[in-house]
Image (cartoon, rainbow, N blue to C red; front, side):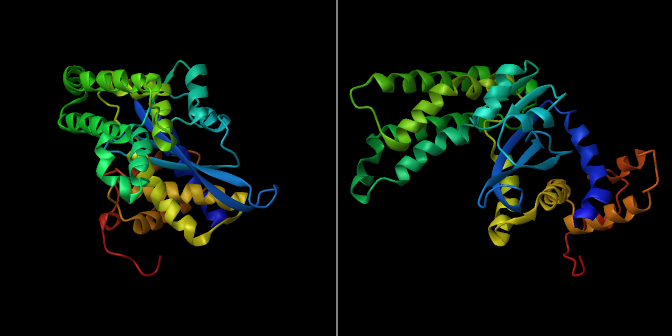
Length: 315
C-alpha cells in the first residue's frame, strides 16, 4: 500500500494540492491519530490534517488529508504556502497564529463550533433542571445562533455577491445583536460556569473570525463539511486503532484524499481508484504530466464505470 500510494497516487495528490489554490475559500480541520513506530514514546499523538475546497464549490470539490507528527502551526503554514484567500476553521491557536503572520489569508470562524458549547451545556443539565432550561444563558445562545442560521439558510440559492448584500441587510443585525448580548454576560451578577462560560469566552475571543462570512458571500457559517469529511477517517480509525509507521500514515493520507475526493464528486471511489492506478502505471516514465487532467474527478474523460454506484467485490 505504501509503495502504491507513493508511486502511483502521489502524482495525483500533488496535482490536486495545486488545484486547491485556485479556490477563494478553503476549509481545514485536524484529528488525532496513533502511529506505532514514529520514534516517540508510546501513545504519543500524531495528527491527520484535512484541507478541502469551500462548501460552495460543489462542481469540483477537493478533499486532501495530510499526516503530520504534531499539531504545530508549521504544518498548515507549509501546506497553505502560496494560497491567497479565506480558510474556514475552528478557533485552534495554530490557525490564529497564521492569521496574524500572513496577510494573504483570512481565517473565518465556525458557528457550529461556537454553538456546540451551549448545546453541550443544555445536554448536561440534570433532569430536575430541564424544565428551567429556557431560562438559561445556554438556551438563549442556542436560540440566537439558530436564528442566524435560519436567516442565512434563506440566502443559500443566491449568487455570492447577492448573498453578501442580503447578509448585510438580514443577517448582520442578528449577529451584532448576539455579540452585544454575549458581551454583557461577564459583567452580570450571575456569571455562568462550565460549558456555558467556555462558549461565552469562545464567542468573545472569536468575534472577528465569526463575522468574516458577513463580508464574503462564498464563506459558509461553519466548518461542517470538513468535519463530515473527517468522519469517514475517524470511523476507520476507531476500527484499526493505530497505524504502524509514519510511511503508512502518509500513504493513508494520500489514499483517503483520492477516495474522499472521488466520493465528493459523486464517483464510485473503488472504481475510480482502480482506474487511476491503471492509467498512472502506464505513464510511469512520462515527464509530461498533462495526462493527469483527464484523471481529475470532474473530468468528462473518465469512463462511465467510475460513476457507477454498484459495489465491487474484487477491490
